[in-house]
Image (cartoon, rainbow, N blue to C red; front, side, top):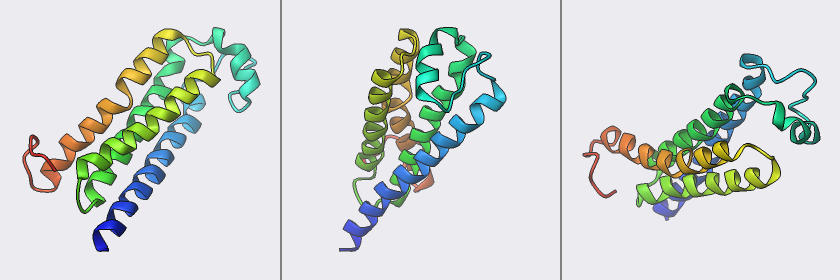
Length: 145
């Protein structure tokens, strides 16, 4: 029973903390890289209608939010899980990937960003979480945990 509880907790913590990291970076983003004049980033309609005004610099923080949220969530799931640690890290990556796919349909971002985001910010970050997690747990990076 302890294993099931820890594994469930691993998923909950991974999703909650990863989501918090993601949203924190999204909220901070307009303060670091202000959106084009007249764009309200808190209004999805304004965002959709103004997406053509965004420059590549405006996509740095959304990418970092997705990548670091997934990395953090995957690493925490790996560290908390009692068994199948890598599976839980990848599960976090898959859930965040599903959110990224949904966002790609909801917001008309440039194709280059959608491809980069979906290809690099989710599953590769879950993989990196497992690679960082193994040494923390005292194992080699190539071991199957």
